[in-house]
Length: 189
Image 1 (cartoon, rainbow, N blue to C red):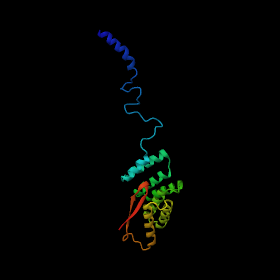
Image 2: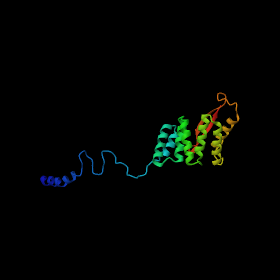
Image 3: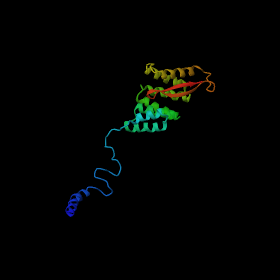
Image 4: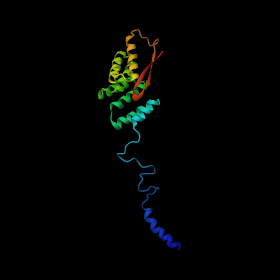
């Protein structure tokens, strides 16, 4: 009785064994690892959102990488360029930040975060006159609704009006991130 069972199993299992490639991989797998995502499947996490979260956590270099990924996937929109400029600003790359923020404004000249962040860059570079004009533009586009932009404009105008300004005696400035990638320029005395 054992021989008929063995013969039956060989007859049934031999054709099934031909469906499996050596190494244990079945017909549906591409290898020993999890299958790749389907072509055209949406990303689970938006790289722009990840970048914003990394910026909030103080991980500016990683945020910049995530923003570049967002630009590669979604295109170089004003919002993404503004985020890239903000990350460069936080990394102290003022020239790059200014250039990228100006590109963002070429795409969308009504982007309040881009105008505000460009003003912060210009303040950091010591270009107070242009910074005050940029903050005025951001303030006008925002209709004066954002306190941080109002405060940035106030600080720029105060610095512009004080020709005897000495950075060693006067307040130092600190950048604080607000909502939507807008930065507040705070003075420390």
